Image 1 (cartoon, one colour):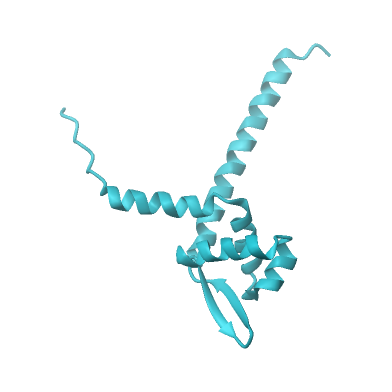
Image 2: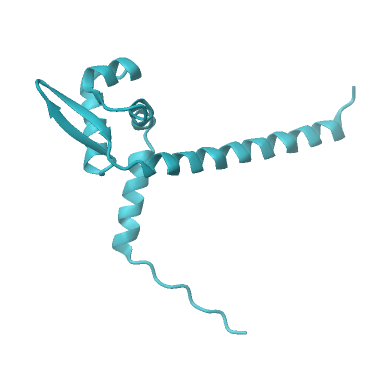
Length: 120
């Protein structure tokens, strides 16, 4: 039976997907997302919750906003940030579940190996 050739993915789409995952590859940005899970916060509140400096935090907020993950709402003299795309939490949960499964499998493998090689 002849193999079917997989469809070619549009390189522009693949670049966009890669860029999206790059945004999520930074631990500080994940901290920010975790803080905003409970609702909108201003920069000072996020800084206090994450321990990030204001300049560093502003840089990460800009990246997350440009990626469409966060939205920025000016209120008086402050700007409040909130999650613009709640699907982000499903994506992160999926990744966390997979990592957890992998760690559990590794622990089981190590347990089995230890029981086979235990001298005591």
